[in-house]
Length: 139
Image (cartoon, rainbow, N blue to C red; front, side, top):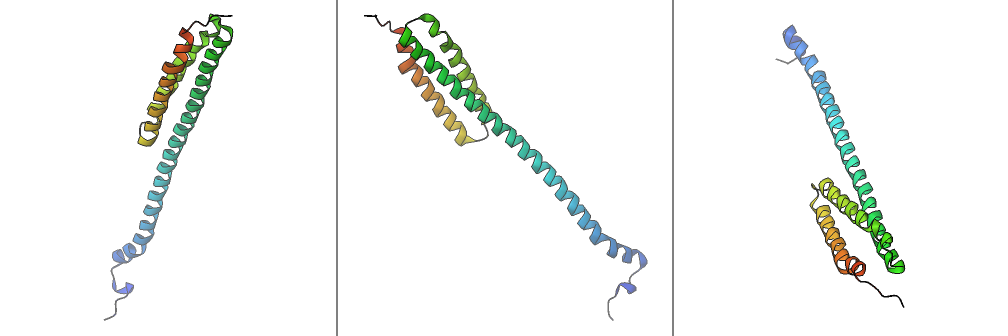
């Protein structure tokens, strides 16, 4: 006996005809929600990366300001030229702290930020602070 759709009850015929399109529709809806979730995740990642770039550039600007303040002091020996140094160092360290918070999921970036922080601290300890505390006599 051959199996045909006509041999099924009407309810079974309806199920046989409607279940495949319903399955395809459910798969399409699931793919839509996955794409929506993925797009949201990508947007959050892009915003985090953008904030990281902004904070990195801000840190570089503050490190340069600190260096320029020390150099200005060495050239002029006036105390008002060293005043921006403390503010630049404080804001630079705040930028590094914000970068640490932003990049906490990525261990490689976190290690790089830790290395940069150590280098920045070493630069302050070995170069900037001795230069600022040393009184150079004018000839």
